[in-house]
Length: 417
Length: 64
Image (cartoon, rainbow over all chains, first blue to last red; front, side, top):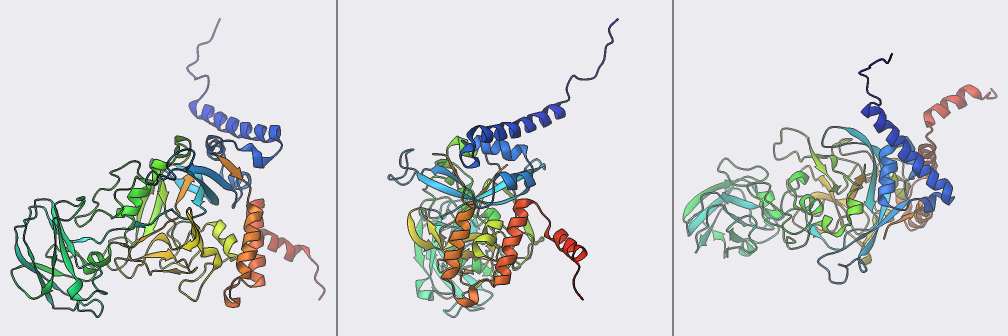
């Protein structure tokens, strides 16, 4: 007489565990068959299967720091590099192994890879932001704004007011930007631009600015915080925002195709490189299927009054932090584990310092299309202001010289997991 | 086209070249380099260096 049981033949979790082990065994069998670890990996899918089926310790042995994966990337905006035949053959350094958090909260082993060279062109971290959002539009006429704080020595002084005349109305949803380069430009060079929308290709008009309180007051502007009048801060207006989560660079790196940018704040303005295709456009599906968005933590600046010291994003591609590049941090040990690759390249077992007294040839990073060292953007904010991030300079040291609005190159990271 | 390149030794060679071009003050000290190498080797071999230190102290008979 037979016995009926309600127990499943095989639990799903057991089956998944068996599958993971089979993936690893398949990889090891392939190694044995070909007799060499160097030749064994024949595809990104195979590597991804091994990483996903392993754990951090095993992955460290299978994929040592400093090994490279070469994958093509097409620059869709460059007729010389936009086909399978002419694509850049991009070397990705294996820079770190560690557990990573996915969007669903699961923790999985990840293999961090970073472009050995930097990008073929620069991109603004963020455009200079608008000083005023106009959700209801703004009539043509003369207006003025007042600075509550001083910045630089060119004329942006506390208590001064600056007037301008718009000859055309700004439609609802438009924005006013201007005062670009505020601390470093004489008032005679300041301009105000009116925009029909944040993503408009060109301003409606660009008008001059002069000292005075003519026309209607739009309010006052603080140095680092938005004012109660609804105006943006002077630093974001002058040189853009250093906040990774809302940056144009983050959007560019994590999108395919055109139209990769959308306004992230009330004051965002479309970056100058908006017409380029999103970074992910240039990769084969094989590469993109091997990587996933992971939780990326970035320290916020201390001057804008954020509630928290750090902010999390989930990114498929991101630029490294100070800590990941083995550089001393302003807020220690929050922006991701140090990449062992950079410790090895620098020949250091402790964080290196910043500034021109800490020059390292290892930090002189050439580009996909240039043999000379380039300045390369990091995602860590210069925490003492609203508008600069840290960068690895072409001269081999790390500094906050580059404001967010400067279009400089980048050496992105992604994670096979 | 996909390719996997074993490059660990490449890092060591490149590092040597890069360090040779540095100012003296920017070069890692011999002790720093030795420690970095040990850390790297230990990481690859999955060894906890602090365990080794403990073993040495307990296992060696130092002449007084």
